[in-house]
Image (cartoon, rainbow, N blue to C red; front, side, top):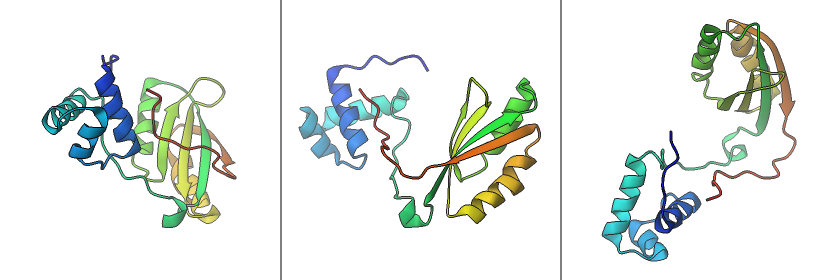
Length: 155
């Protein structure tokens, strides 16, 4: 997607929505210096233009039994377009994979997955990840502590 042109009001709206996506429009309008109708219209335009992709509720992983945060490097046997597409299609089906990036460097993909425990991670690797056609190597690193986590983009 090409870079969007955003004015100072758009930036203020986006900053507030990144802090609290459930902020009532009347409150948002007051905080950004608009009346409610123009504020709502700007939010709708930001959504239509794809600047706002979606609004979500962030959960505490440990509170819902998903305390294990794992980074997984996956190397494929070959990097053909077909192999890459097949891997990406399969990974998209796995709810425990929160993020997946095609990488430069030693590994082809970097995944971030959340799971309840080591046994679940073992099942994920053995029953799912290594059974994807073309996977040559899987290397994992377990996060001991989350030092920083944010979904807010620096605008």
